[in-house]
Length: 405
Ligand SMILES: *[C@@H]1O[C@H](CO)[C@@H](O)[C@H](O)[C@H]1NC(C)=O
Image 1 (cartoon, rainbow, N blue to C red):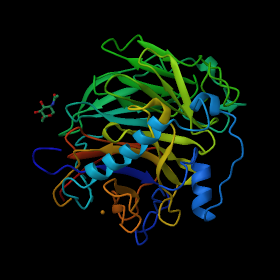
Image 2: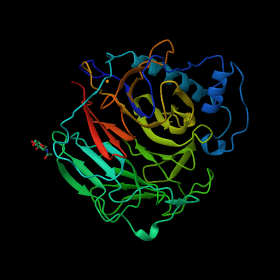
Image 3: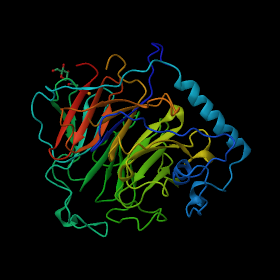
Image 4: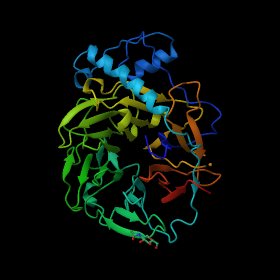
């Protein structure tokens, strides 16, 4: 792939309460004799119970698929997709995935509230979406409705850009817009996507950072259940393809991924039978995968993203499920151009090179100190793959990691 032949395909994940990596993450290969299972619940049940297939009906199948069976074309595309993944996966060299904290970054302390989202811009600066003087407290919600609407939006800037080399504040915005910031994603066209769990909305900001270009969900109105497609409920994260297709992890109350066209039209929904708080998304466009941190189930699930063949959207592709190794998974991110030299716990580097269960997929475990993270919430990797930022809630701070010590 990359001319320097150092292409790697990695998922970086941060988890709570994880131990050392002595066991492998398990991945089940597909048996070509079998029909493809539609949900991870079925897939994982089968993994557990031998060949038992659970055929309980799926209330959302109308959204996800037009029928129960894939067309022959889609079956072909499916197997071709897996073959392509194998091919891509054997290119390049695997790096050991370790990351080292940069203890002098930021040089000067930056005051932040609870850090909801972390992202990087094209220059590799850290961009933080934080809650300033606002906190997510036990009484912040009643029946999923935000109880502190009368406090008004956070008056201080909630988005802070920190210089990659010294952590100095370069830019701030996002005052008088948000109530409880959560996720932040910067897409390849430099649009900023944020989620606000109090508003139950997703916003896209282009050049103008005062007025959103696109809004999903209805302000302060939680979706009542998984069938409610007008609203969202405490959405956590967004992933966007190069051509603008949108995936929203929704969220704390529902457990689904909603797919929209670039202009915000509902396309599909999937994952609602599988997950318990999808907290973070990682899109792997060249493998046609959308991966989700299934937080309370302590696992990462990767679905077909349906970018090449819409009929395949939402089909299970791979899962990282080792509860002895991974605690609750708060955030994941994907890097194709990952740190590639010799690159220490609760941050994980997972190798997407292999879906062969005989290989060790978690290739490194790393953390800022021997005590690990306190309450990591989000992370991102710079476009060149050289640095990783991790945001924490309580103490509120941002860590910068480097590929060398
Ligand atoms: C970040 O800080 C470095 C070192 O002071 C400086 O050279 C660079 O111009 C700064 N970056 C931006 C975008 O201002």
